Image (tube, rainbow over all chains, first blue to last red):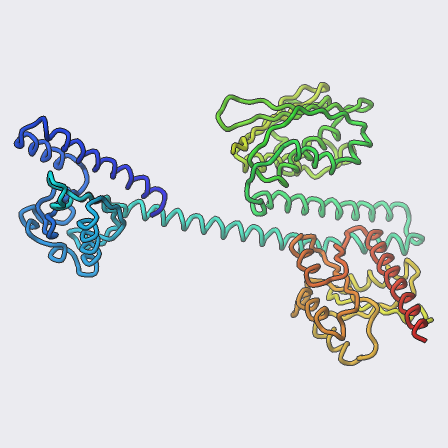
Length: 395
Length: 147
């Protein structure tokens, strides 16, 4: 039995058991007639088909919902067995299950098929309980039918959607693979042969021709970086690892190790609070820290040592934790803040701050994939603070 | 000691541009080694059948080839006693970790991603040239020892 139908079945089971227990408790307080009236009202008003049988498997009665479902009146089913009401291949299982229930004297839940008045087959869950006399002898059973056909259909649709999603992810991965191989190959040829032209025939080319060739080589190389960036961006969705409990202290350590040359060259001072354990993909989280710290260094003010501080804040929300990475860099104009997370969007010229404009788009995609959000607070010439949330890695 | 010009690099590559670049690279670094290009797996095995006793010093193998792909060729080369000891350097555009892992599983001696930068491309061949010379001098030492 799958998720949603499981929940429905158990809820109804409580209802059925509650109904029986209530009737038993009231039995002592009410006279038989009042008791029967109560039972009748309940049967009439419970919006589910209910039936009861004697210990020889013959129907003793049912409610209106059962009548509507099966397309026969109560008087038409009384004294009949399952074989009189359902096709043999379906009735066999009812019979077997009833037999087990009469032997155990307890209750049972199982999923099976039922045929309605139009002859359509439904997926249903049966909740049955044995009825006993004062001496504890099994005298019959009461059963409730929960129609899970619609739920099952939704589950099937959901499963199909899931398969479609997987297929579309595979297509995307295949596309990324094609981009990686088939587009980079000719690009490499353009770049290599223009470079070779420059190397071998430099003496025959004037300065203008050489500068044109250099532009061509530079363009090809930048395009390759952008293809690589696009690949990285698409792989956030298609190539992630299963989420696990990850120590952000370890993640930061790894990101700083990858950035060691940049950090050393810039003389950047990086300080961090003790960071929490979160739930996520270690490799992708390293990429988040690496991009944010790398940017904080890259967009530092000329002649000023970059100072980067990493803080954590419990938001009060049950499973979220907030992390911030702040710097003393050049900052971002307010009008540009919304654009910085867009793919390939760059705020500065290539010669001043080289880059592909992929980094922050990748960061945003990773954070969102982890169920978090990211935003930036920034003051021009003072610095920026990137704030993002992640899910706590609770045990 | 055998002449450097006898050192043969068997290049399994269908891209004529890369074959030309490889030849230019050897010229640029001043290596006397020869490039023997074959453009697919079938031609490679025909080469071996025709020259039983003349094995190349190294095989440079592209992965994306027409017909039999690079990993299939690698598997055959490294399981055949006749060819298993020839160093195979996989030289591919792919930097996909799965491709890299798969090639090392199949006993590739090295995996090098084709660089976009021409100088880096030349450096790859300088590295391969050094490997061959090292291997050949080892071989000569062993042969001399036997005598």
